[in-house]
Amino acid sequence: MIIIIIYIYPIEGKPLSAQAAASARNASRAVWLKHLHQWHWVSSAMCLMGMFLFSITGITLNHSSQIEAKPAVVRQQATVPAALTAQLRAYAAEHDGAKQPLPAAAEQWLLATWKVQAGGRAAEWAADEVYLPLPKAGGDAWVRIALEDGAAEFENTDRGWVSWLNDVHKGRNTGTAWNWFIDIFAGACLVFCITGLLILKFHAANRPFTWPMVGLGVLIPFVIALLFIH
Image (cartoon, rainbow, N blue to C red; front, side, top):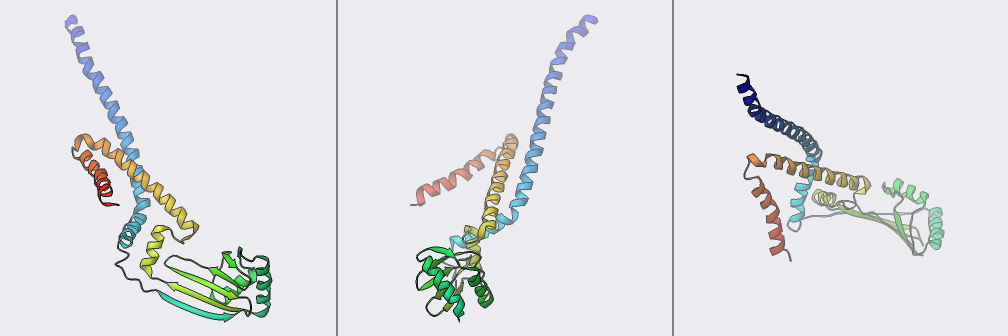
């Protein structure tokens, strides 16, 4: 009886050892899946509004020639005070052909006259005039001041909200804060894609169509780009 027990125990011990190894693998797999799912849903939550915005503007950009834009142009005129004109004339003599911001007094005059915030933007200086470009998302604006008589012009062009959204998509004239957002959003999208791919890898054994679908996702845009983009 003792011999039989000793003989059977090693045989039964092997399945127990394999079962323990399988349990360890399953536990490790569960830990990895838990972390991947956490990173995946957090990155997807961060990307939600950005993906919604960039998806819509991707369509509007792709069909920009079919979406009519009716620019609204506003032109205004004023006369710069004589003292300020003399100051600008002297400043232009020192910076002829250069790109330098307007003096603080000129920026204050623009703000008070047309509510234009120059914000230290570089102006183009010449002996007879100063030109201040004010590009913006969804439109354009500029100020020109004739230094001989102080005659000033302000033009503001608004091309509509679709043009604004398209410029936001491209990061055109949107400022430093939005450019930072685009970079952070792109990083979150990468985390979302990579964690999604790894989650697919974990579930691929039980989902036979996983890798064929991933392959199609890679192959279709590659073939279209190769055959139809010239």
